[in-house]
Image: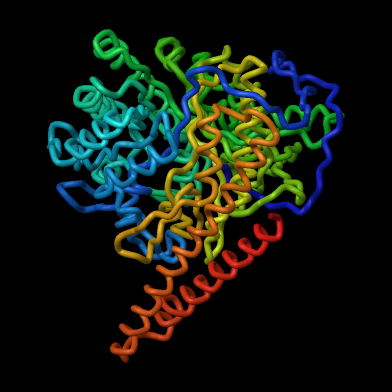
Length: 585
């Protein structure tokens, strides 16, 4: 997820008349904001939802699991919002059957989850120890999914590196990670490959590299500005290629599966399409983001624009070589073509303009590409400060991938929207609007010939959101984190997404509008159930605090006042919705 700059400036895109030679197959002028398209997806299109191990499993120190870099990072004060951790999170480790029942309610075709490396290899090193209890957990999850005809799509690395590998070797800064990661992947193929046919090596390696080793916002929290992100990415790309080759030579013939990678990318649109520099800046933005990883995997080397810009800036620093590492000719051949499908995570869009950064500001990943990001204040932004709803950017990105990388098979591995409020509203109309618009843009892209085979809503559950803790909620299902049992409540978007899946798209305007109305009716009941549960929790907290005179004033506020206000919010929302529905009828 890209670091965002919320700039209060309206940007109006005119008809684009210039094309960029570096992406001559991509038509930058074809940004048609046309009307909603009613139609269905191809037969066999796969619908799913996703999660990741650290964000949902909890059980951080149970059954022999080793420490991950996120366990250590979140236990340091000041690293996450309100010092939240994923120690218990959704308690998904104990709720396999419960959560699969939610997937069945949605009629999902697939479920995307990740395997925690330190849960099955506590030190990250296979020769040290394989934790059979951890292996057993994922066996149970996979078997339960298949029993309910839900296809597992498994991510090998969703950011939770074993802490031992970080301490001993420096994590992804060290080339030794390539072989350790290959050993881990090989164990997963060995134990689960008879049933798992879709493997994703890395989820959003951009965040791993930039936020883990450049800005320090994410674990392991290093700030190796101008070098750390490039070095980490270099090793990740080579690790991905090695795992692909391992599967290709040792497992493909007997298991008949596929190995890909999941890359996240915002779309970048030129601010001024009459300005060649802005057009180049927009293409540079996309290349420094998704192209950083996709171009080596599909074409064998880094994007030329990255090599040019980072090389020039490195020379200005007085360095003898570029801060961007290089691949040997043998490595280029080895890496090229190592993806059976491309996973795409996408959430938002930015307008992009040329901006030169003076050398006095220092040399960092973000100053290397000479761009500035702008947003239109009219774009909806219900949750995360970086996430604006700009559906047309999704189709633009998919068409770009088609032309740049030879129309690869694509699975959308992450797409969704958050809310950021103390009083979560189960009637999440903004999420319904987001899914409706973004999924429709994906359908238009498929009609344009983009080879999209499946879509994964992000996410199944509310969960731990990294440095934002529990302050942002992406889930289709609300999770009450204050309740030790972590109950799940369906939001209105559950009913809406369920109907998209059942119809395999959008059959006609009248029916789609009816879905929205029925989803609102259903969620008003869920709101009342949640409000009743909140009332019980508040009453219990009041009784406990009465008997504990040493409890602080802050605890009184967080455990009694805030839940009480939330309960009132939910009740008022439910009453208001019932009034609207009666008035409409």
